[in-house]
Amino acid sequence: MLACKVKITINNISAQKAQAVKSALEPDNVNFPENLSLQIENVDNKLVFIFQGQDNMKKMIATIDEVLEHVQVSLKVIE
Amino acid sequence: MLCLGIESTAHTFACAVVEKNGKIHSDVRKIYRPPEGEGIHPREASRHHIESSTKVLVDSLQQARIKIKDLDIIAYAAGPGLGPCLRVGAVVARSLASYYKIPLYPVHHAIGHIDLGKLLTGAKDPLVLLVSGGHTMLLAFMKEKWRVFGETLDITLGQLLDQFGRSIGFASPCGKNIEELAAKTSTYIQLPYVVKGNDVSFSGLLSATKSISSQKEKACFSLQETAFAMISEATERALSFTKKKELMVVGGVAANKRLSNMLKSICKRQNCKFYVVPQQFAGDCGAQIAWTGLLEATAKKGSALENTFVRQSWRLDSVNINY
Amino acid sequence: MKLIKKGAEGDLYLTTWNKQKSILKVRKKKAYRNPLLDEKIRRQRTIKEAQIIVEAKSFGVDTPLIYLVDIKSCSIVMQHIEGTLVRDLSDSKLVRCCNKIGYIVGTLHKNGIMHGDLTTSNFILSKNKLVTIDFGLANKTSKPEDHAIDLRLLKEILGSAHVYIMKKTWASFLSGYKAIVGPTRLAQVTNLVSVIESRGRYATVV
Image 1 (cartoon, rainbow over the protein chains, first blue to last red):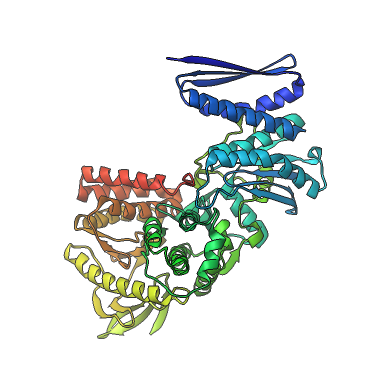
Image 2: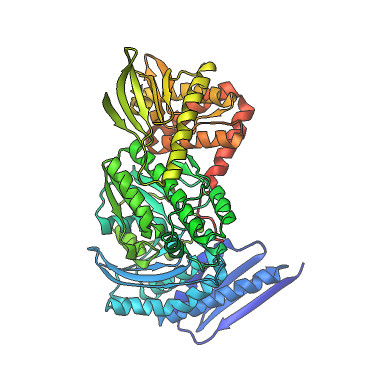
């Protein structure tokens, strides 16, 4: 059982923007495959993503990839 | 009241701004085309949508000469479709809704086709033939839902045309290419014709057509003649059974002239009016999402952000229509 | 001769045959169809319909008497059945008829025949008997998948045109069907109905 935790922090982001990104991504966190989870926290001027997974590294990387793309799009459209 | 509609269920990423009175102020689309001969890969398509989304959004606002703040509501295609693609539209929609505090409406993609069709054609209570890559169904509205009177037992008409088109080297979506090739001949080769009551089955037809694909033009011609005749027959049965006085055709394949002509012919025989969505709006677009969003807004408030779901499989006949 | 209906399949005329009131069913050419395809469909269906109507009688299923078949014009002259289409009956009568329809379909299936177009407008209630008509899409088959297609179409019709009473009508139908084919076969076929229902969904575009 290989357990892995990945933490990605986005610094210097306004609370309003952080909240928007969080609301945009959270609803899709329900259908994750087994053994994979994502928590999003909005603290101070930071947005923190915590990925936790077991065994399936490929899936985890793919998920992180997609989530980061979504973050990018979200920030871009808010302009 | 202005609505921004966002569509991203499969190969098309689109944004449109529509007003409550039905005026379409802008309609911008970017279509992902997989390499020739290949089908759509969901993740690749979603990457395309991610790259195009900002420009499509900005263009749609500029065309409509408005700013995000001028929007009253936002609607997005919540399904059915390909997961990764759907999520892009949803993320864009939610981001805007949350940051600018605009009410958000999840919309069913196919119901968007139907509602937009009614708006643009003026049909009042039609039997609907929905033919696209994602659906092939005959529907009539009854007791708050669109009820199915006939559908495909396996693949859709759009998938049939697309899969055959790809097998002879075209890039998806192939409908137009097939229509063009088919117009070059009138030699018919017998192919399996399968109608079971109000339903049709295309998989046998697909394999059989692939086996004669060396004669490209005749294969395309025969494929269209057979598949469209099957759809026409199922439609005629449904018309005869439901006794509807209007037929409305929507969905990407509605753009095909040969299909339209066949259906016009049955309508004449069954004494009913024929409506087809204008070619420009037959394929996937933001306007269909925006319009249904506006209709939904007449009956209910926007969804709470946590509840704005995305659903790959979503039966059209399970959606309650309150407007 | 009077035209009484322009059905989806063909035109129906009221006529007489040997002084009996009868129906002339003609599968006319459909201009929108390619002529080769059109000819093949009309001939095949005319022949099949006549053959199967006669065969169904031999298992005790009430069907119209066939007087004449003309393949060249793709027409059949058959007995006229006086009565009401099940589709047009009152709700309570419809529910009861569905039980009888279950018996009828069960009998056809047991004898290796699928009807192919099971809708409530293909059963006529005539003097308390149910007469089955329109065997144009019928086929000789004992495959459970084909029987499931039959049931699924009927279920679709009950769930759309008769949606207000769907639960009752479907249950009534299934009990009549089960009485003939037995619980094992019923389960097998209804499972396949669910399989068909889950197809034709938005499948991932490959």
